[in-house]
Amino acid sequence: MQAHEVKTRIPRAVKKVVGRGGKRGKTSGRGTKGQKARSNTHKRPQMRDTIKKLPKLRGEGVSRNQFKTEFTHSVIINIGILGIEFKAGERVTPKILLEKNLVEKRGNNMPLIKILGKGELDKKLDIRGCAVSESAKAAIEKLGGTVK
Image (cartoon, rainbow, N blue to C red; front, side, top):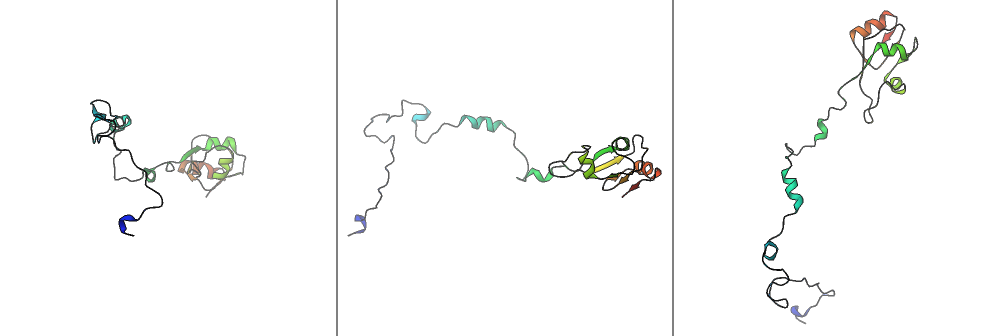
């Protein structure tokens, strides 16, 4: 047995070759003239024209997610709202504010909360885990409340 006599177990599938003369004559099933009748040509997909008109996203291919500023802004609550929603001597924390629907979660994270001094407060409150403005702190401590 010689090397040229070795046969494969599975014969290769024969690919149809178009445009090489043979059985179909002249145009070999390509129609007459035009772009699709020529060799080494193809029609550009129609979607490509639309895509090429879109502006390029500039930059070095960096993911834009790292630049999101979704959690940087504080949720503002005025002491007037706290005076309405809470009883005297109650503790105010971000978790309690969330339970009373005064703040909403951003994604899965608790937002930063800042309490401002707008409005009237006539109750002693214990505030923890929230940023507090100077005027709000003065109003809370004036009534005997605490800020931590």
